[in-house]
Image: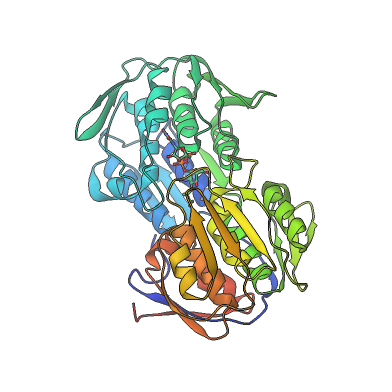
Amino acid sequence: MESRGMDLGSLEITGGVPLHGEIRIQGSKNAVLPILAACILGEGVCVIENCPQIKDVADTLEIMRHLGCQIQCAGNTVQIDASGVSTFETGGEEAARIRSSVLFLGALLGRMGKAVLPLPGGCAIGERPIDQHIAALRQLGARFYLEEKITADAADLRGGQVYLGMPSVGATENAILASVPAQGETTIFHAAREPEIDELCEFLRRRGAQISRTPEGDLRILGGRRLGAVRYRMKPDRIVAGTYLLAAVATRGQVAISDFPCQELNALTTVFHDMGVSTICGEDRIEVNAERPLRALPYLETAPYPGFPTDLQSPLMAVLCRARGESQICETIFENRFRTIPELQKMGARICAEGRCAVVKGVPALVPAGLAAPDLRGGAALVIAALQADGTSVIRNTGYIERGYEDICRDLRALGAEIRWSDNG
Ligand code: EPZ
């Protein structure tokens, strides 16, 4: 599966065009990554439809091939036969490169009773420790030896009470991946509530697992059940959907997203309401119309689901650069997720960051500039900023954007944007 676009390429964007139209959204990156890890559990061939063709998926499939999986890709359909999995070491530089490789910790313990992975480094947005992952897996019987690699073994993974110290998405997913094959019942207390977690559970149920969410939001798993084959279609990516809706609002356009569960973006539609954007939320469709001037947001903080998603913080900041008045955004999830600010300031944005909060004073216009994507969602934020500027901006380091957006150029052109890939990196 090849990712779209060019690693060292760049994007050329001529702004000032209000986006109009209706599009569908690629499959979810943050749901498919744990689901791919889940494919090494049990028997039977897993077929994943609507799988996004993004770099993180391509890297994950490389890890799975290294483990012994037979993988066939045809467009957005991936077929995985994990019967040949023969090693518990992820190896390879892909595992060191992508943070989500840590999800093979739970899956390999579940499949092989042992796991050896590179220590997942921090990344652009923060240190990204895995203490919650380790604590959760220890509560299921795993033992850890942390030298230059993560080495874990669990001769007999057993179900039990897993208490997460915080609603970590990845730690919740690792606990699920290990407790499904473990003998006995597991309850995961303070489990994360992101829709991607529920999609992982739905995928595993379709294979035969018994997983339910209690009214309090905890996860209950009856482990040790046989997992069989499945053909599963990925749901749309809520962060990609939110990015494109923010791009529509930034350009004062009118855009709809079809076949999308509007309620997954309630936190964003609440923000749109506060900014004076008319939003129509249907059963499986969402439409925004931002033809009026945008109001600033006096205060907003990111939070675990159902709070405002940290992954849309930078894209929202790019929109607030031209809202009327002063906005304040506080990033409570990651410690280094304001790296887009210096790039936005090159375009004339008035932003001042103090610790975890940033104050954005709206300006009438942004000017085009040569920009460098600092990370995945920061890159998407720069695209949104460039769509507002009167003139042509160039964004390099587009490899970050390709990690999560199948083809941001194709999607935004479908809404009328003047954007193209270019090879002057
Ligand atoms: C997932 O990352 C997503 N990635 C992130 O999306 C998303 O921003 C994040 O959840 C929060 O929603 C994938 O699903 C592949 P966490 P994850 O564990 O699991 C700290 C994107 O742009 N923490 O909920 O790593 C951690 O440092 C990416 O698509 C610990 O301290 O998120 C962070 O500050 C970026 N110890 C906070 O918790 C741990 O053991 C949230 O992390 C684990 C996490």
